Image (tube, rainbow, N blue to C red; front, side, top):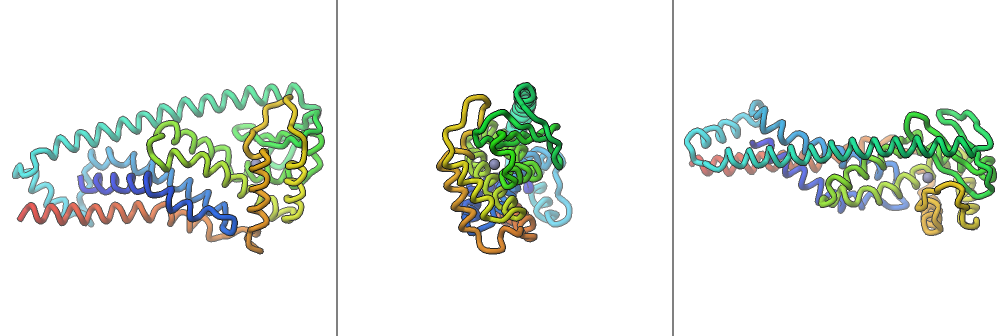
Amino acid sequence: MILSVGLLLAAAVLAIAAPRYLHLTVAPHRSPRLALAAWTGSLVALLATLAAVPTALLVRPGRGVLDSAHACMENLRATGSLPWLPALEVVLGIGSLLLLARLVTVAAIRTWRHRRDTADHLRMLHLIAEDRRPGPGAEVLVLPTDDPLCYSLGGPVPTIVVGRGRAGVPAALAHEYAHLAGRHHRLILLARICAHALPWLPLCRQAPDAMAGLVEFAADRRAARVHGDHRVQEALAQWSVAPTPGVAVLLPASPASAAAVTLRRHWLAAAPSGSTRGGRADYPAAAAISLAPAALSVGAASIAVTAVCTLLAG
Ligand SMILES: [Zn+2]
């Protein structure tokens, strides 16, 4: 019970407060990879915390650091001082299990649809492609268009789709390779699943938009590490002044829109010198940002429950 209350408090902090402190990590002079990892880590921590609530109710871990608190609660339970406690545990258990069931169902349906749509899209692309080139970790499909077309598809057959006019722009291809190497398509799918399953939680509701921008900024910086800032800026400039893309294939609208391209150029220009070389501390820092609030919440709830229980036990 004590651990379950702590986990619920941790879930509430992550779900409600995380968007506020995570937005502090989102700024052009900071690492988009750090912010992206922190958003992803917080989503995963929220899901793990929700999954642990029914487990903690069932297993009743009460040894070790929670030993005295556990003994106090069991004493109150035995003397009947808290007659509503069993009912509360049933409500918490059923509520968290229903949430998990919804999450698993939405994840299964969305993942299946995503794979089906990607496979359909790939089949169509293979019909119209004028060239197929093997690339490092992905196949490159060249389409017969001079539009500045360039995007990637994740999944079992990683593919980069590029118009013939864009096929000779290494910085643009490097941006798409960065999406594939960073598993960005999976991260966006995770965010969309959370948003669809738990839309009333601010962290889940805001994650798709926040992470959709961060994957673009992160891919731009990774491409800049390989080809230099000016090459990526040039590639983006060509994109932003090009005419509206044709309708031969469906373009992912947001990363190529004029507003998005302008913002991406601003982020790249505002990056501190040396930041495009990557930061080894990004992932440990993101793990700390994701896990520390949850760990502190569990600790604070344990102390509070122990204190209240001791007072009640008199
Ligand atoms: Zn992109």
